[in-house]
Length: 97
Image (spheres, rainbow, N blue to C red):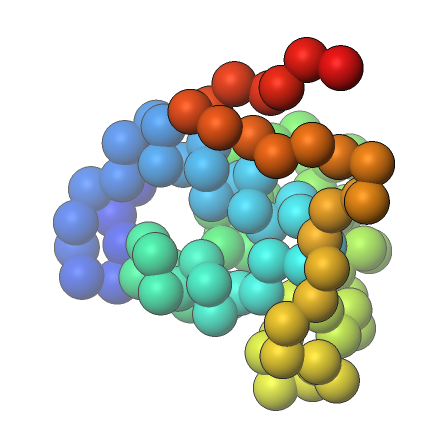
């Protein structure tokens, strides 16, 4: 369990979600802040403490300078995040082909 900026304790499920969002290329740090009130530096600290050192180094290398991780550096407002072949997901179940 960890505390965020507002000193609220994050559950293990929330920590897992933050890590998942941090790994996603198109999820900006601002979205993590909006949802969990964790700044970029707090996300980096969380990633450093929660994942393997080698995984952290790979993640930092990917995130360093990536325009899609910062809203102000993006050239687009909305983007297409799914393949045209992907079917819609309903009720948390992936549709069968």
